[in-house]
Length: 150
Image (cartoon, rainbow, N blue to C red; front, top):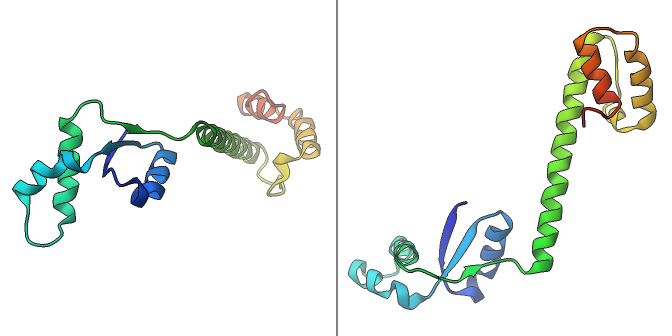
């Protein structure tokens, strides 16, 4: 897991912090006092974001037991459910693509509507048509079409 270091200015960085947390990054809260020593030693005239970023990183690496930002429980649960749904959709898409490839190998003339594999009547018809084919590819396609592949 990647660690991102930001100064403890939650009133300014609240949106950034929540976006990073939702994307799975660990966010450590660093008080500005912990960065002062490094910033003073590297200071140049004017504002310096690179120096400030380096000071935050150095303080975060140097200090132990810094507070770690976390999503509140309802937000975390929604994120987990959303991630789980996205993973299921990706798996379904992979299975559909594999089935389409096997069907194309068995019968290049077979035309299946774009979203047809999502419909039970289309899947029932495919399962029936696949009984006419033999071999490993046909068996795998039958497994996918009857749900054994998922």
